[in-house]
Image (cartoon, rainbow, N blue to C red; front, side):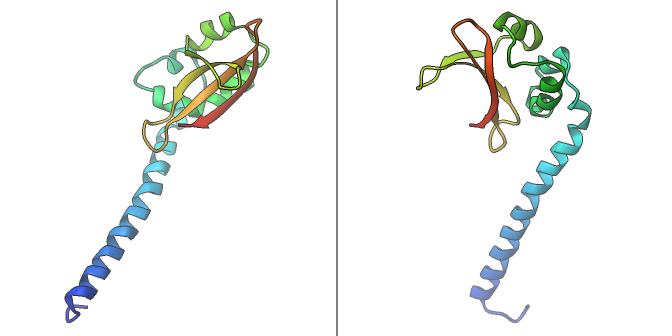
Length: 128
């Protein structure tokens, strides 16, 4: 290894860098999931806490299990998780969106579609 040419050293160095990056990304994701364990239980306070809003994604299963979001009125949703961003999709459906996850690679949006009567008809998460 020490008696190799400069080109070989560059290739080895590049491979080591790629391997380190390939290891760091999954480790950082795993670390976030481990640290998020206390935030998997939904509460209005935690959801609306600006220091934990990047952990909302871990609360969604508990939120949807405890509260039947589909079928709720917008007023009930607002009192439970606050006002999101209201939008109209290109297909004409009405949506309320909430930012979830860490901004950047792991940023997602929690979407609540609702009808003309203000009743939630569908929920899903989409990557941004």
